[in-house]
Length: 413
Image (cartoon, rainbow, N blue to C red):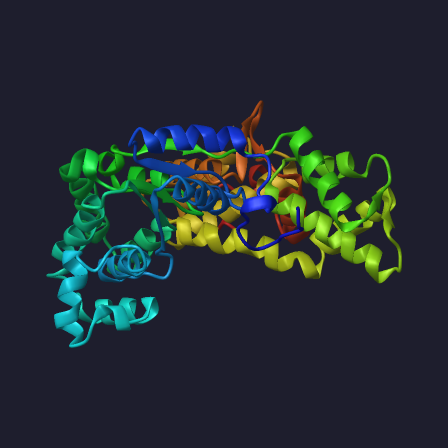
C-alpha cells in the first residue's frame, strides 16, 4: 500500500472500504440510482472508481464524467459524451451523427477533441435531444452501464450563481430524472457525487423531488481501528519504524478518521524523518508535525480548500459570512450554542437581512451535511480536531463571542 495524498486511489492502494463497496455494488446491480454523499476528503471518488473497476472486470461498461468545470447543461452533456466515447461502439446513433458533424470519422477524433467539437455543436435548444440520444445509446448496449457524474452539485451551484435563479438547475435535474425514468430497467445506472451537498441545495431551492429517484448512501469516516491499521500499513510499506502510541496519537490529534487526513499526516511524518536522517518517528515527532506541518504554512493548501468549497456550496455573501461566524464561534468557544445562534440572528436582522433565522438554519444544515459541525449537548461543535484547531488559529485573536456582541452590532469578519 503506497502513501497517497491529493489523488483518488484504487487497486492495492484502496483500503478498508469493503463493506461500503458491498452495499454500493448490491444497489448498483439491483439497478438503483445512487446519490453518494459524505464530507470532503472522505474518498468518494476513490470508492466509485474502485467499484467501476471491479464491475468492469465482471463485464460492465464504466463511465466516469467529472462536471466540476461545467457552467451550463451543454458543458455537462459534452463531458458525458467524452466519457462514453471510448466504450460505445460506432453503431451508436450519436457517434454516427458525429461523422456528419465533423466531416470525418469520429474514430479519428480524440476523446478531448470530441468533447470540444461536441460542445461546439450544442446549444440551449439541442442539449436535451443530444443527451437523450447519448443515454439511450448507453441503454442499448448488450452490457450493463454504470455512469458516475462527479461534482454535479458544484456545476448546479455555479449555474444558479451565474443566472441568479434556480430555473436552469430545475430544468437540468428534471430532464435527467425524466430520461433515466423513461429508459426504465435499460437505463444506465446513475451515481451522482460531489464535494458539496446536493440535498441541501435542492432543499434550499424548494425542488427536493427532482432527486427522489436517487437512493442516498453516505460514506462515513474510518473508525479508530481502521485509521490505525492504515497508518501502520503505510509505515510498514515505507520501512518506517513507528514508536508505540504514534498511530493512536495521530487518530486522537485528528479527532476523526478522514482518509485524506490520515494519509497526509503520515506523509508529513515520513518527510520529517527523512529530513532528519532517521527511519523512525516518535510521539514527540507526531506532535511537532501536527503543529508545524498540518497546521503550519505547508498544510494550508489542504485546509483552505474547506473554505473554497464552503463558499461554492452556499448561496449569497450573507450565507458565507454567517458560516464563517458560526465556525469561528464553534472553534473559539468550543461550541455554537442556541444563545449564540439567537445573537447571530439579531445581528443579521438588524442589517435587514430577510429571514435571518431561516438563512442561518440553512447554513447550519449545510455545515452539518458537509461534515464541518455535528450536533452536541449544548449546540454544534466541530467533528474534526484538525479543522477546529485550524479555525481557532485563524480567529482566536479576531472573534468576539456572539453573546458578547451589542444587540444591534454589525457582524464582524
